[in-house]
Image (cartoon, rainbow, N blue to C red; front, side, top):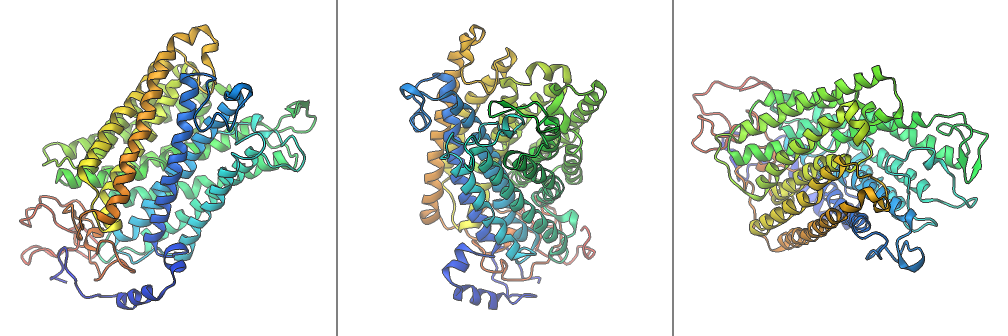
Length: 606
């Protein structure tokens, strides 16, 4: 193995990759590209599907912003579809747009692009495996998303439009069955779609945990894993424990709607304009079950991005990650605390003040592991030979935007403050800074960073930086003023706040934010063109265009069936940049130590 270096075509060892490669060429088109069991193809299928839904979610957001900027004017694309008299948006349509925007972005974009696309593509490559532990289950995890795509999409076209009870689907608003017997409502379709998203995610989480525990290359101990893999592993644990609760709650709400059960419907509820004598259920039970999943889900939506950003920052600062083990423990700490803070979403539900104080303190404690990660990223950048590539710009934006989102979260953790700002745009500002300005910037950085490994070609750097600059400027123009709106009490989920004189002077600010949102969505055209143009005409990447250390950069670009053309053996951690043992400023995990260096213990640390 001493001859293995970056770019080598070493003979296969330990796996019959030659046979696998030949078999891959004889497979049919359907089994190679459609119903593929290859983790790389499945990852790219997730990537294309989620980027398409990202466009849908963005257009829904523009329709919401249009209504807030110019109330009751005809909304392009949407106004005629959900029109009241005179071609204006119907009031119910606004609630539907808010619900479906949030639902699409969370359940069909952020979670599947992080766990589905990057989890699938990167995990076997970064741990030195030839595929996932359960390839068939992996294929099913993608195809079980298609019923979710169908149900969410179909909900727009049934009578009454899509689900309109908010993405949190609180009873009793969400418990009303369809008005016409036997008809299918948007809310029912939404619940069915949510169920399939849950099944898909559970399939993926079992696969990821098994693969990372059982299939690491020789020498790849747990504390030699890249932080991307640690983040994916802990995210999979979160999904495995939290998702069954939401899936069960979804079934219960479906039965309330379609079979007349009373899990969440109290006696005396108004159902289809009549007072129900059935019931005996509790709307608060839904809130507890929903948030028991959906607060950990907030971390499912950002932990993988934190891991990927860590790898990007270490690569382009040309330095080892600052505090590797504290970074691992902080990811685990965030996940663990995430299970005991769900009640902070319910501070205004009338809970016991002692219980509220408990949730408040636990929520504030999450700031500690988050601060560790932030300081360690800054420590990694400090004194490094920073290269301002497109992936690095997006990674640095992730860190700075996450700080803003995290700081606004501290305000909401305090019960007395939250009671005032709970239903205002301050909340909207907070989670968009965490999930869009944070996670989405991390996702774009990851796409630019691993694109050469996925497709064998480089994306255009100049247009990548233009895309970054425009997105960064417009997103701050869109979301930062929301803090100001929230501080003066501007309400969420209200189609026409200007009906109240208190808020009429805020309309110009909403118009400014809407223009920025239009600019932000339009800026993604640059990304789309760059993405598809580079796939065919971008410069050939080679194995390791970024001179990075991870195992994935020792495989061909793009990797063939079976991933590696040699058996990778791991000698060190993934962040040995600037090591004194080598004249280069990077030191791949598979490069054997020099002859005079002490040998690494099997599976241990060098």
